[in-house]
Length: 240
Image (cartoon, rainbow, N blue to C red):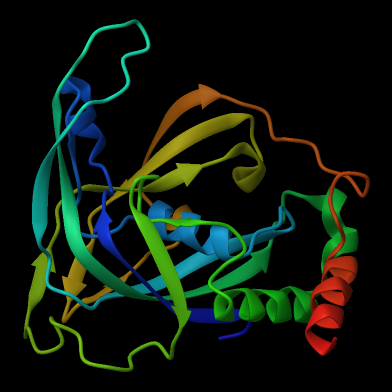
């Protein structure tokens, strides 16, 4: 697919929090990553407001295992609290994603150089990302490596059936991604087949709930480095 990247992301722990469990101060991870979590990882590899990343597919490489830990969360009002957080352990995923130009950012039309954005994204995958990689939360450090999607042996390759994962958070709609002054959350019902989860696109989610009114952040040539300048900077360094 055009403008596509493929990579493997892995780490000792991950916490893709089921928001229902936050109400009591505990945290329980979903069994698999959400679309939004994968989108956050891709945006840590390479992001500009000019583009929108679409997560196409995730392949679960390792068996799904969980581990509970006693955590002392920060009490900003004082006090000392102990909570149980349940993490995914020893995770590895292959990810396939592609980008499109954000149709709700006509102010950034000058930055729409498809070839250069893709070159930078591919280079960013090879170096492990332009920002730190987190698997759902900051205490779960992740690492990115380039790969060919589908290569290697995955734990669920020959499972021979579907695993229905129930209703999960798909992701968040931000104002500059949907063209209205509102932040929304999306829900869906994912199915894992032989370790593969094929994501529907954000605008295909049937269950959408408003969260809060919010305005998109303004960008301009003064506060966004153009892809032309960034491309010249990165690949000049490479040649040097």
